[in-house]
Amino acid sequence: MKKIVYVLLITLLLFSSSSLFAFSKEVTNPTLVQVGKHKHWCPVCGMSLKKFYKTSHVSKQNSSTPKQYCSMRCLVVDMSQNSIDTKNIQVVDVVSQKLIDAKSAIYVVGSEVKGTMSKVSKLAFSSAEAAEDFSIENGGDIVVFDKVLQMAQESIKSDMAMVTKKKTKKIYPMGKKIFEKICDKKIELKNYKQINQLKAAIKNEKLCKPMKEKQLQALSLYLFEVKRFDNLKKNDAIIQVTKDDKCPVCGMFVYKYPKWVAQIFYKNSHYSFDGVKDMMKYYYEHRKDISKILVIDYYSHETIDALKAYFVIGSDVYGPMGDEIVPFKSKSEAKVFSMDHKGFKVLNFDEIKEQEVYKLDE
Image (cartoon, rainbow, N blue to C red; front, side, top):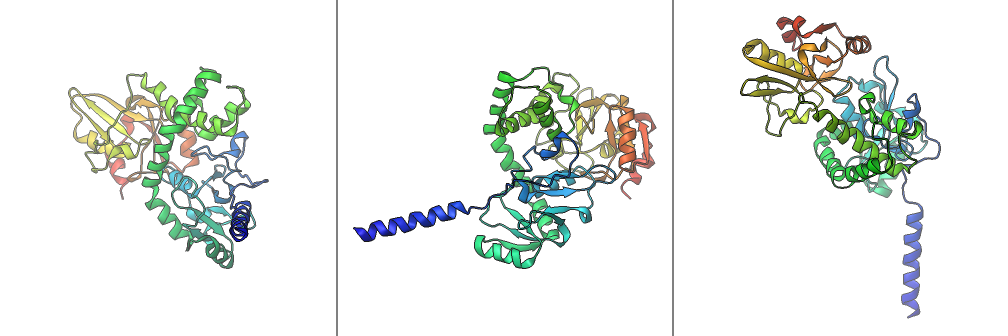
């Protein structure tokens, strides 16, 4: 009997010891590089950078201020929408907790540590020796940055599906309840271009009663990803696509690129495109009997009338099919975007020339 008790005690001590030394991504004093009250959160998903500091990455986008992400997954999402130089990315070294050049970092991929916004964890180290030691204790493969980036890009679809399922089942309903119970119902959601900006406003401008970080995150996700688009749907001019809609020019499924979708409506039909560039190619060949043309404002994601919009041609921001024509509701915002992203021209719809559209594919 004493032997059994002894074994149980030893097992309990070992379990307690491993729990005490469980890996944590959170740190006390994180290095935050973003500027403004929104600097504490990821601009893509809104997650706390302090809580997920050891998986955070930093990108520098031309003349704009740096962005700091909770994970490589969110970096990859932003890369699909903005021009990001992979030579200018930093990552947190797990050991020193300092930002280091991602290109020179050694990653451990697929360890026992839970992934951040991904099924597979990706942790960076400044030395191969430290990465090997971590891998021996926690499992995982040792990989360089370019390979990790490729892996993250290949798994982005399944990672996003996993996250979306969790949001739909738990987070959005929680956020909706919080909004209806303790918030100002007149929050101007169109004023916020990134979720971390909305989150900062909720916390600092008393748009809602005080709440814990978990509740703030759920509320922000609901408002930014659900409520904001519900408000837009009240307008008759709204872009809606199904999972079966294909671009008639390139054949891609357009629902995968909600930020870039454009549509042309005829009397008894309409066509959806994965960007303004392909839409314009179709437009030049099928101009007869068009009833309306809709595009999405790059900053606000609001559906706008293409005939009243302003377009930036030749920027360094890429869409699903490479160089893209970027739409804006405001001419002033189009000009600012053009300056920030090396745009060639700011044009209204009628000024877009066919030869300029096809030149973007060269």
